[in-house]
Length: 193
Image (tube, rainbow, N blue to C red):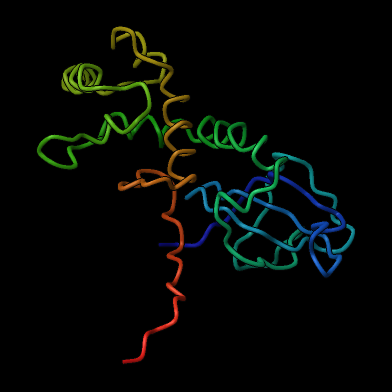
């Protein structure tokens, strides 16, 4: 999977974590392409604001000195948690066509499960209606989707809910939008016989 090019700021800690042994500025970000959660060290004199878009690609980064590590949902600060849904919603709203294409092209995962059913608020009836309607013609916008599918929950909010579920990682088997979390290695001591 490719690396993130841009990210939104979730939290900026100008003095770092209070529990940290080193007092260096720190920021937590969410990638705009794969929703990767990152912890970065900003450049000196960079003042980052919540939901500000910053470049994190491999070229010269104007505001970010280096990417410290990928983080898990449980590592997010309380400010990051408070901004997470707004950030995901902004990413989806800024890339409407990409997520509308998901509704137009979602497929079955197994014989009994469809990708659309993984979205919060969408069940088998909504999935069947969406598939039936898109056979008549692709959805032109989220408004068109809501108009053509009876009692359709907000399609952007459904995607935001799914992304947050995937980031939380509580027994998520399928990742539709977010990069799967890094595998934690098993550090249990080996038994000697």
